[in-house]
Amino acid sequence: MDEMVLKTVEIEKPDDVNFILGQTHFIKSIEDLYETMVNTVSQGKFGVAFCEASGACKIRSEGNEDSLKLLAETNMERIAAGHTFIIFMKNCYPLNVLNAIKNVPEVCSIFCATANPTKVVIAESKLGDETGRGILGVIDGFMPKGKENKEEKAWRKKFLRDIKYKL
Image (cartoon, rainbow, N blue to C red):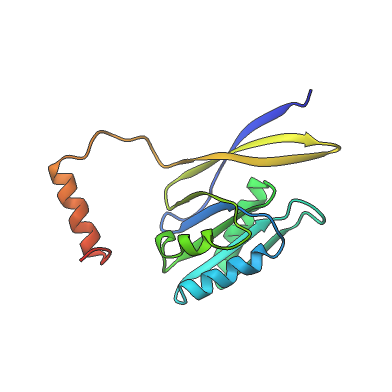
């Protein structure tokens, strides 16, 4: 019987940086994700890294901001789960790019899109003579602290208009 070990890996990033974590399935994903980001939010700065799951099993990366590319590489080294990717971004939000990322033909699923403190739940198991890793899910942010009241609802509506996401 194979033994499986569960681990959590915390995403390390500055507080003001958003990211998308997902699963994909082919080596050309790294180039397609890069092109999708550039074509969707030309003013956005980003770095993307992808863990190859067969062949050379390399962490492949691209981006238009070296610090975000390095951040993506570092987090993917820690997560080390096959066929997963992470995109760190500035001057844009997941809201701006998420549907375009979901439409990349190689993208299988999205685990989260957030700026919150996040932990990734990893399963690790032997695959023949090698070790494999997969993402089971994420812990995105914190537990709710009650229901929204009238004042909090008014604050939310004002905030969305202040940042120009609503008229």
